[in-house]
Length: 339
View 1 (cartoon, rainbow, N blue to C red):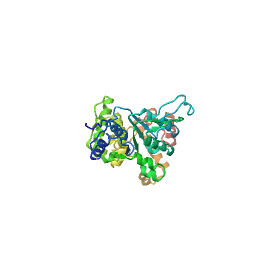
View 2: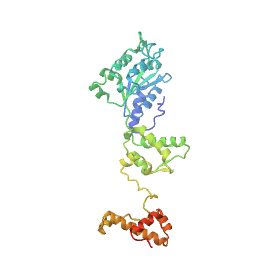
View 3: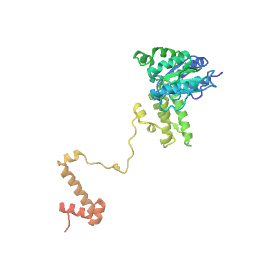
View 4: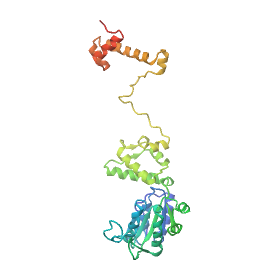
């Protein structure tokens, strides 16, 4: 039977090696520990593992051990009996019971408290669990697959993870490579995400320019596939043209590539073509201080406005954008007011 990798995109050598191991381990009952950086798609890989197992028609039950407070995680995993704690108004099965016959996925298991690790170990070894507040054990038939972005060997050495549990989980290690090690998969994924987001927004699919493609390939992708997907969604919304160019890419990708975006076009507040702002050099050449320099500039503008307005003070004031009374005060101060 062909390997079902629906949802996983890419065919780089690094990913093909993952497929090779997946194909061998999926039909077995062995416990698998999936490792990889955050955002690499570990849950997709675990779901593929379940789809290709003999348990594929049974439940697949994921739980993120790092997203649930430790005081609630035991109840989520093993269930609880009525009255086991405040608000436990009825008995409730946990994830292990819900996954009976299928696969339970313990994501971010490196975040799990040491006291709970003991109970996970027992569930693995004895194939039985005990609800919180319960007095009897329940047999469960589940395949356990765990994942983490932590180095569990380091966690064991530093006393934050049980060594016996680590070896019980790490029967089959499966490492998902970071996006930066997946070569052409970067562009395959980028175009897949961009096409999907453009379809969602009912716009013509954007095209990546050669320069933009080179910059995407050269970026290190610390957030991996999740970061790439977010960037493609942003482009589908913000890119105004039909082609994605380097200036459309996020600033962090531009910086990583050493790309200098062109200076922004002149706006209404920018200096018009041919205009030159006065500089300190001009003030020094006239051997003037700031006040005298600005007074001279103002006087020249007053005289020019009067000349253009043929001496009509209302018009001269409008040209300068000031009130007529203000203009007269300035003219008096410089003895420019005609009597």
